[in-house]
Image (cartoon, rainbow over the protein chains, first blue to last red):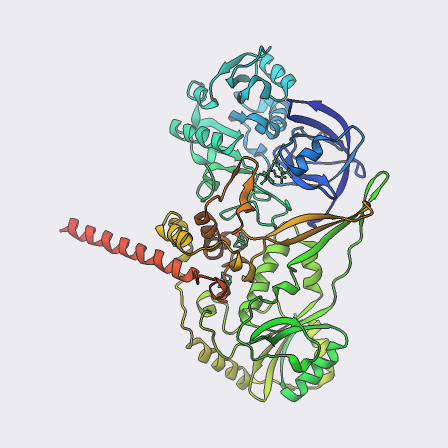
Length: 275
Length: 361
Ligand SMILES: Cc1cc2nc3c(=O)[nH]c(=O)nc-3n(C[C@H](O)[C@H](O)[C@H](O)COP(=O)(O)OP(=O)(O)OC[C@H]3O[C@@H](n4cnc5c(N)ncnc54)[C@H](O)[C@@H]3O)c2cc1C
Ligand code: SF4
Ligand code: SF4
């Protein structure tokens, strides 16, 4: 596999998530099939602008060449992507990285904790879990956002809350607007201890600001979870995605290739994380 | 793979290189302003094969300080990716054992894990490498401690390997490419006694090292002591954040990327250039910086070279060339940092065994 394998993708649809976040449905221009797994990411961008690492927020559909990215405009590349219109083309490389451990979830209880846009890579994972619902035990989703306005994937959140085979806890730091969702006020960590999950049979999946993952992971460890039952998806600066540019290194790990999903115990042993 | 060894008279060696020079770019150590440096050579006479060390290793001719990795052309439908230029065939002459090891390390980084770096592969394949064994040591080098010298032991990574026998060289060959080049020369085959002589030279050099480091428990010791006071003190008292260490280190691989746009707004080039974990921006992301302090950045360099590299690539990231400390404006020496940590560990063990003795009675 070569480090520089570009593909072209075209924007098919755009969905507003929040004032600052949009979801884009892309289709590959040249290839008929594009495969990826939940938790992996693309390096996506445009010549003259650069590239940014963006997770898949959708689940790959067998035989399809479509995928969704949910992007927050925070800098050069992402602000440029923010201005994309339907029909425009971008270049991407991918899929990269090791995603969520989908082989491990059979027969387990799942605790999914997301913060803000961190729900994006967990959304595809949740879709996968729901497709395989009968092979797993309890599923709990705890999703936190700063305000009601900052919650992404409103339609999915409502769908999940309406189902009886998944328990949902949605919380905001500030309840600033009426919402049709059942919301609670407080940080995600507040709700973790009340869950009726058997920690001995539960796997936890975390994505959000690293400081949030720190408090969630430590809370779970305190409850009795082992470090290798907790999975975290990390974000680092990345230029290549192929394990060469060195920016994403945490100790002996390349987040782009060995991650972005890690077992907590495997990554928290190194310096320079907030975990 | 083909291997063989011959003896080549020195007055036969230069004319042979001249012949190869007609076909290849020739790169080797030359003297410049009182220092040695790897440079493209105009005449074989300029080669200074008895050089001690250079500021930059030959890395810069395989993994360039800045290079184009891709070119795009804008079309009405989107973008076309333009074919890249080829690498120029070149011979690297006079690469010391440490730098040969550094190239093996870079091979592991760029070629031996999941993805291959296309530019590196292109230049690596176009490069014929002629190593040469050192006949002395430099004040700062410690290859013997790192297992990377003074004799180059692996049977990979080079085409030729020279050992200076005074009026002639022992020339060891590896691979068909080397065989093809040497064939016209009709040389005398090396014997057992020539290899003995090479070993003797190696032993003589080995006894001269001033700088040493014990690597037996190095990885564990460094990883166990990520909060040792030496990091903060060295960083705050000495480190200027100049990035010299990572620029001169022959195994540093990190790069950054930038896009350049042609004036026609049709042609785009993507370039990469050496980056350094000593730069403040290196681990910066939206909303924070994972190595905001100079302490964290210095610790990353030393920990990467002496510890985490081993888990990543199965070898040390430091090949003991001594360049980082030579070119550090304040003389920060990673072996001294490691030794300070080792002393603390030793004291700890002594205190613990004393406590044990006390308990036992
Ligand atoms: C595995 C992975 C998955 C990601 N998934 C998503 C996603 O689904 N949606 C989304 O909106 N964002 C995602 N990100 C974050 C996204 O990559 C960054 O926001 C983006 O690279 C910033 O680039 P920029 O050019 O827009 O900003 P820049 O102009 O480069 O800089 C803006 C700020 O972002 C910092 N920055 C630069 N590169 C990165 C980087 N790779 N990661 C984080 N910060 C960076 C800069 O230091 C600066 O502070 C992901 C990152 C990773 C590593
Ligand atoms: S860390 Fe220093 S001594 Fe070791 S290889 Fe790099 S430059 Fe040479
Ligand atoms: S992280 Fe630093 S020390 Fe390690 S290879 Fe990159 S620049 Fe060199």
